[in-house]
Length: 150
Image 1: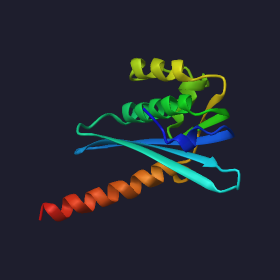
Image 2: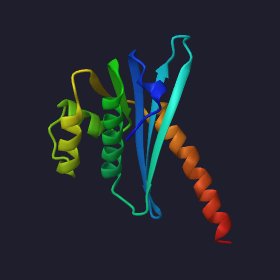
Image 3: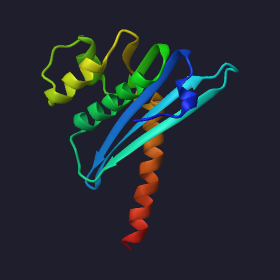
Image 4: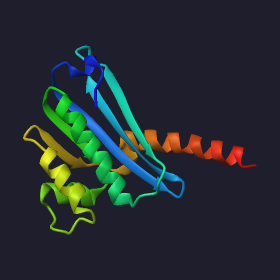
């Protein structure tokens, strides 16, 4: 995956928000990269992927997190904070809770992508910028489907 060259500028801290959603008609994920420029303006980059099949919520959330981690590896920054609104996933990966993740393959893939400069945090759904973007996008798709099936 390649990012815009502008994003490869060195910054002290980058924030990445990730979210996934699944329904009867398919699944999608969103990763939103938020960085402050040297002029203190926020610059946002959005990556979305859609899947034609419906997936369990934890699976699509893990896929969104893995996508965020893969993007984090291409960014040159001292600190990278990744935010997810799935508290279970955030706690599984930082070792706060010991549970049996539903999809161990995705758990281990995410775990191996976490480096020293990357931290994963839980964030409330209403503050997750990727979730907000995804909600707006899904509402548009829903209206389109509703209008074309009449």
